[in-house]
Length: 246
Image (cartoon, rainbow, N blue to C red; front, side, top):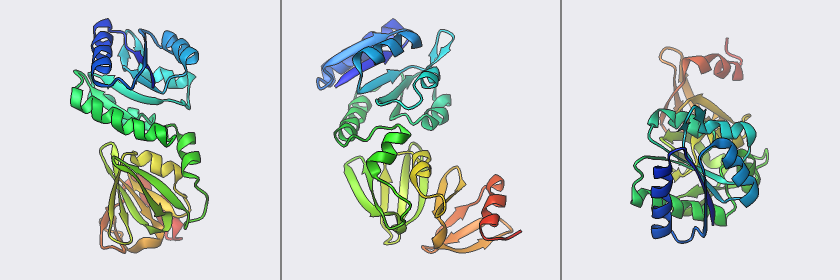
């Protein structure tokens, strides 16, 4: 596995490099950069499997990397001292988000999960996820849902709803099974058929075929499995239009 660390703090680079060499020898090459431009040069030269990316870097933002590489063919793990950027990190489809000082156990657990994804050729870029899951417009199509232990195969028609649990997603199926996926809810929104699934709230995606009732008063949707789902006020108009309710 080839890794690049992009961080303007040389002491943080050295610390992470030592941890990787000591606790995760499967990373066979480690290259470093202290600016985004040098990081991009390293990426083009070494074609890494993984990039550790700081966010606040001497007037630069780690997110600038995605302006030049919008669909990376490598996994990105943000390593930063600031948790205020977590939502933006999720939007940029990062693999994980580690707060400094990085905990050794958390680092190793993250890399073990990453290895599963690399073996399955499932990276966190939207295009790769879509291709890897081989999704089509068919609601009966089975998808491979990545979890911390491997993959669960489920027909999209069996998905009642998806709930955001931090950087993970809990999927509720028609058989009452709950599957916790290592993918964030934004990624599920990207590849689930938007004629069948609807993002009602930042925390919820529902299967429209599983709606039992809707309360206009408090904006609550009740699903076929009895779950109550929130409908954000900004989503209410779009939701009602789906059913020609005005």
